[in-house]
Length: 321
Image (cartoon, rainbow, N blue to C red; front, side):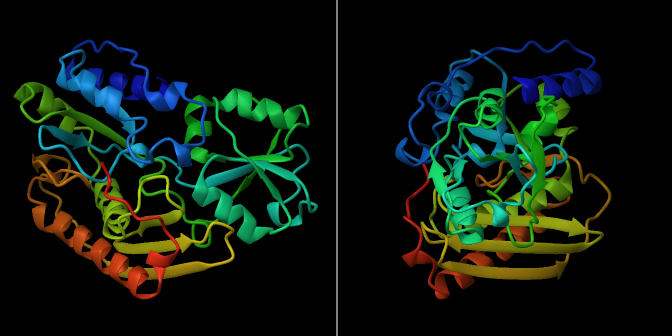
């Protein structure tokens, strides 16, 4: 609701029209089972997309990392706004770094990727499967039930909670996060009102779209669900694209890594607008179809290198739904 409110306010500014928030509850919101046991992809998206198709709302705001990589033909990701902080953070009571926590310390997270990365950093730790909202998770550390928890920096920044806990930000170069983490996807029907589509497209950031297209293409290329133990992050420094990808074994002791740096130039005209529906990794920017194809080529190449190095043996592969 918080991130949807941010998009609603931005859409009001560009359109000059009021935007109403409609609360829709998904399976991922109510089922407190482990994410790895909830059927993988789509647990946060399916109910929302059903509501969009049924006309209960005109657009959806997703955390992009929770979206399956296969895009329904009748729906369109019309905008990916400027990305927030994509890092993970470790929250502890006293600021002890993850690598220095004593053996047997209990770390809360429900993400197979984060579990693998935590155990790779400190094999002596114990993992406690954790669901619930940010406040309830942090309280379990404050109360001493857990030694630490792992959260997305973007979620903390958007909520802005006050807490006595200490934050340790993980370096994306060695701790790549979920494909699309920190980014939002504004989705609507492909046959939506042209005026609405035009307004949504004004929220699109081409650098974010390029980066997340690379990431989601990697995920799709190795046929891994969005909750598989895969970390991939693409970022720009000027016109230099840096990509770090890692596929982990369940205990983190096995990992297949690929790193890439490449120059990517954006054409200025029309770069913030979407021309046509894409294939699920982000719709294409006007005058930028070749750029999005380039992003997919980069992602495909990284996926092939991961598979050649043995990633298929580490990841339960599935066709995203």
